[in-house]
Image (cartoon, rainbow, N blue to C red; front, side, top):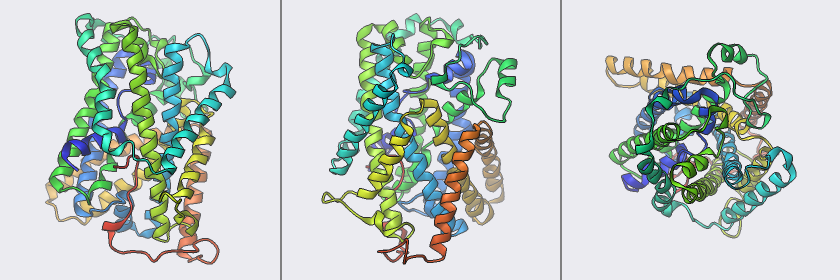
Length: 466
């Protein structure tokens, strides 16, 4: 892999473009929304990228965080991280068809509410899911080698929107603060039933913190996936690829936000998933809005295909190493992991009826649990046991404060239903660890392959496969 191709792969892992950032602007208004997308890269994405590079350099392995965690805390924690990461990845996949349908709906059928046609909505999303799952089953690689072309197709309309919109920008619009009069819709999940006093803070600031923080976090997570490519590239290529993707992701979020908020008259309560097609139409004409809808389809569906492939391969790899039941080792006649695909489709189908931001919250919760253990592994392997100088270790310790604080905030903002969801996931993951430690091969881990100590031949995991 070249630096450019690796950076494009990580770009799609981290978000694949500005599609889906709109709820942050509805929740926080123009000013705080812009501040959020300026600050989040440095508070979260940059530390995650540095941690990924350091651990990948020390322990190059296709399994990424699973390997790091095993090295720091043992095989049981590695299995737990792998399971939670798989759930987070599959949940991320579920957002792709939901978000694409929102773009199509808001641009072509704004007079129809999605909540009025739940069965039709679920039928369309199920059709998209099953069609793309079949593409994965057949083993058709329509994304990996075309990642650069997909990037150009997806970002071209936003480049045009920036060029056309710059003369129309009124900087005063960037300073608009939350009105405090945003109409709350059940379908965009601006209210949550949790213990955190979100309503009190909203009354004081006008910001709906739960959707704002969750959406920011959702759009910037994923740089740890660079660890899965550490065995296929040099350290220099890995460093440059991660760094380039960090810059590209930040700019492809911030520039469309600045132009859309500064050059249009869209009010705070009008922002929702899919609104970039509306602002594109206002800035450049209906043709530009339609192009953005097409770009969203290409980007989101490409993420779905590659993400499902990688997630199913993760289960296959864990089964081959004896961490999951031997059933997960079964391959189709096309060489694809059949059971892994079936499990992924089952989870996605269960999540499709939910609103976009609810799926985002569930995905974020699982990812927080997983990545928190990875960060603790960094503290154990690099800060505590590493050979670096004391000043460098101090810098790394300080660097961990912001991302760990963000993880805590995301967990605190969750609803009661999400806590139950997270508790069930953790309990199931612990059961897998207990079963593995007790060597229950006779009932669960049948057909178990011997564990291979060479980390370089682990199968890849994560949200995007090359």
